[in-house]
Length: 334
Image 1: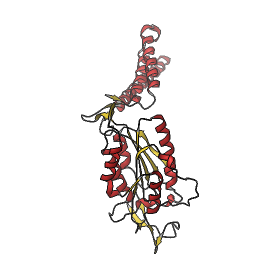
Image 2 (image 1 turned 60 degrees about the horizontal axis):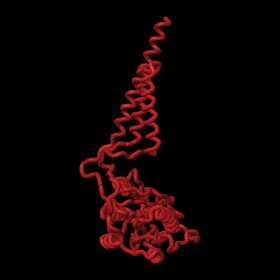
Image 3 (image 1 turned 45 degrees about the horizontal axis):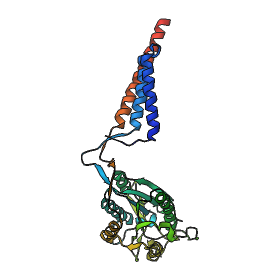
Image 4 (image 1 turned 135 degrees about the horizontal axis):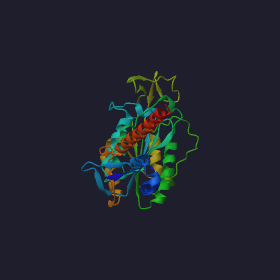
């Protein structure tokens, strides 16, 4: 059994100690030696154990090896990443495949994911839980094409670089690997507020900019995810995108992506170069070391709900006792 506490373990340990002290006090003090008090203490303990989040891993799920590799994915999921080029797949779908291939190629790395759609945000804090990481990767979609207006790939990169430097300062032994996945089409005006500097990722062991899409471009679909309907944006809807007739065409901004790669001395690669990217990255990462066990939580058996169920049953027992007490008092009054 492995514990994955939902709140800081120190708080849970203190709470559990107080519950044990309370139980002992009730046992040795006749005044409080009543079933109702013990039920309440058991409810409290069951909730505490549930918050410890006990997990029973399936055979083969526990990983004893952990490398010092920390993979940063900086992912563009703005509207243009929904376009389909020659592969007839959305650019974001191809990016997801590349991310999964990279994750699978390392022995128990740590992974962090930064995403930009309507806003820039860290969607996955640095984690060694590969089940959670891959689950999140599979959920990456272009949410809303129209509201991506004003997005800036440089803002996404600067946000991720700030976190990168903080993490590296706290973990100097980490081998930091950075992947920027984008078609390079920034939909807002570059006002110079997010100037990129080589120092942003100077401590990266390896970095690659992976460019999605094509120079020829592809229509930007207006995907209604719930209904499955697809149409294409017209030039009156998104005047800041390049146009071809009435339908908006999204082109890969190859020049911008190469510029970003040049600033950071990263490799510039195509999605089809994924094997080369992985090979280059693995050469730069130090030999894996043995660290704490990790567990794939998506395939493991979660047991917290059992303790919550026990707490619920005990709570019903408490209510039942109170209900009987009220009925008994009414009978006496009659």
